[in-house]
Length: 494
Ligand SMILES: NC(=O)c1ccc[n+]([C@@H]2O[C@H](COP(=O)([O-])OP(=O)(O)OC[C@H]3O[C@@H](n4cnc5c(N)ncnc54)[C@H](O)[C@@H]3O)[C@@H](O)[C@H]2O)c1
Image 1 (cartoon, rainbow, N blue to C red):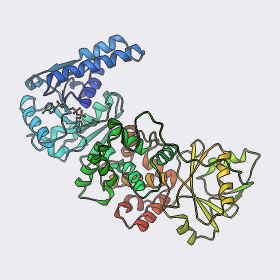
Image 2 (tube, helix red, strand yellow):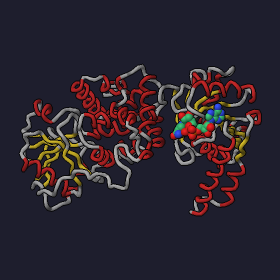
Image 3 (tube, rainbow, N blue to C red):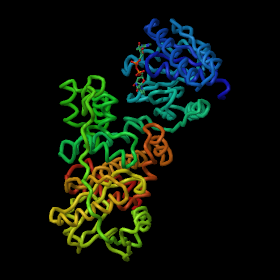
Image 4 (spheres, protein in one colour):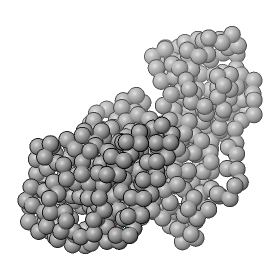
């Protein structure tokens, strides 16, 4: 069946359309590109040609391959020239009526075997397909920007898409050397839905004055993310991010989980849209980013004890055991780590003050989540406010002994990375619970679509699902906000 897909039509020669044309042309398919603005489409091909030339110069591709890609792409000026298309991918303006109008025309130009696909990021595939006499022939093929580079394609099933069409979509992804994941047509599909808390919770914490953008970004990158949420939002554009947030929120019937941030609304009103306007969460006028407030060097404690049954902090145990400056001992049960009379535990959605009420400990430090404690550059801690300064300094010194920078956060419920990752996991779990995608695909999608360091469900297992649920329950209790309600999928797996 796939061998029959040779003639591809791409409608729209914008950022996505021309990228998708390059993907298919690189795999030796014949691509016709149509745009309302023919001059713009020719210009887009020119720009692609220059970009490919620079790849030739850098030795990434051969001059012959570049020429082949260009020869495989034809810019056309009339829709009827697409009559022999085996596959049509639409990447035009994000507007339901305009997309429906286009497909209404295309179904009479193409034949009954043509596979129709939309690259929409937020519109229901079911709604677009509703204008077709054969809605079973329509699927979503949601590429990520830049299409030639990003590996992920969400293959989106409308309510009436046939299995044959979806299978063909998935086979095409393999042919294009992409990772195809199957998603049901639903707001945000997989990635744009599951990633909402990465931005939303960062802004909520900013509003609660938990920390400054530069501090949160540093902690999130140390935790394992390629870019912090504020740097990423500045890059995406605050207006674009707000518009996706609003679309998902409205499509989910105003579920508190997707509530957009007032901060973002204000920034858009002030035209502080990020890098493109010279200022967003940061300034882009050549000034350095503000410095993160790291702790000055402190004398480490002489000894530390680890819970022999808790493996979360094995990396510290191993590294500290190799040092002469500190004695490492073990205890059975109880707290994860202990220095003097201060317990050190992974953040659990409670403030230190709250958590101390239910323990026998004198003092408590909570440590933020990091994917790789051995190699992360920053350790983020919070202390109960009565913890003596000398004890705090001894704890800080221990992590500095390991070459880490230490950031001390306010005693808020759940530290920054733990709070964000638990909410991301919750969202991934709910997408599975609601049949949007399966466990394997949600993990693949977030790694290939937005470069997460590990799949969220895999991360949940690493942290322990019970700990994730405990953290979310504590946040839910503290804030009384439905935003933190636990996904039944997670609760059922404790
Ligand atoms: N930009 C992204 O990061 C991104 C990522 C994934 C999906 N998408 C989706 O891809 C689609 C295109 O986005 P984009 O960023 O490439 O947009 P764009 O504005 O860069 O390009 C859209 C192109 O479509 C053309 N066009 C508009 N109406 C048309 C019509 N009726 N017939 C033919 N051509 C028409 C425009 O002239 C323009 O060249 C949207 O549905 C968007 O949601 C965008």
